[in-house]
Length: 217
Image (cartoon, rainbow, N blue to C red; front, side, top):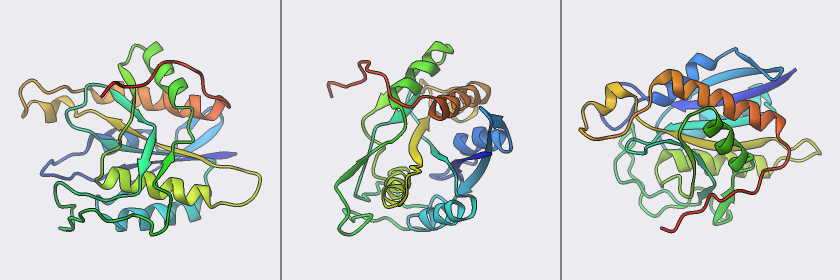
């Protein structure tokens, strides 16, 4: 049986909930396309988040890994295309760390592309009636830190079996956005459905589709 690891974060930045964990935790032990889904919460802390992720990878030896994070202010589900090798924190993490212009992996490549079928996932989520788009930046906070560290680890794996991995950002939940008049939000059941679509597509689509997903700025 295949195993899927899906991760999310604890609350950060003064929030009392994190929509990523509120949604991802509901997928724990689900069966999707014949694969068992295991949900794990990561600390919103530089370094520690990757230590926790690595432990889960070693324990589960998953066939697919998708990390999920909060992107307050974004209007839709955004599937990340690329992670860059830099930590540059606008705010401290949950342990008070605030790295500036620090590399994530010394000597590592400048960036890694997601190995998920990014555009197929976006199209599938849209076909389910949920707003979604390709994102060209995962930021430079702990989300990007985890995405880069995950893809670096997967790129170093040996053997014929290549594990796919990537990152998806989701908007605030309505109960968070109410504190920010005019801010976009998305209900948890909608986010859960979008993530279910992402998992099923990542498990079944071998080659990504060619659709416009770029940005002018």
